[in-house]
Image (cartoon, rainbow, N blue to C red):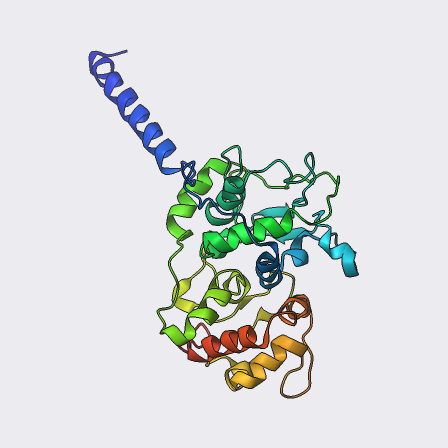
Length: 304
């Protein structure tokens, strides 16, 4: 080793150590501090409403579940993406296979920060970028309701994710770009309820908003439609510029969310049929609030 290289080596090592430390810091999972949650018991009946608009059964019930069996959140549904195949986990109260040993703070950390009880990042196939906007009080209500559901001993399926996406620590950088609990749209008081339901628990933007190459939502094109992750075609544009939907009235949208019927008497199909099963259980007031919000957001045309 030459004298120059020998003198430079400590600096190279120092830069590498500093870089590694910075990377470790930047990818650190964010979590609620211990004792930060309100010391209140959640209301399971109110939690049922959040569970409904959140569509938890659509992903976490067994793929062939019907009727009351949909409340057994055994998991197992697969989601094929360009980053790998993800499997919905068991989130029933089972203490071994499910989340029965979790504390309330563990549940809030999962929903708002995408972090497991042992401090690992969850993949954003779990829509915590939307759930981060849910009020903590509503999450505690949801937690109370979910603890009342039947337990399932069904073991979880491991995700099929290759390198480099298999390195979960790297998701900390992704979250710094895309995990933001702030509302997407600034609205008046008359639209706040609809905004909350659409942007938060309803997580409509997860399917209806286009994404960048690394999977983050392009909020400049909020609800402007996106490629269909389940196959051919596209997820519709929900803004006032969005084709047929853009011409629907508030009453048309509210009726569609209730019955699945369009103004032309067509019916919801594909994954939207499952969504309507959930929105059909909402109150008329909440469906109207969603419709008012969708009619008020800025129109965004098709991408060029």
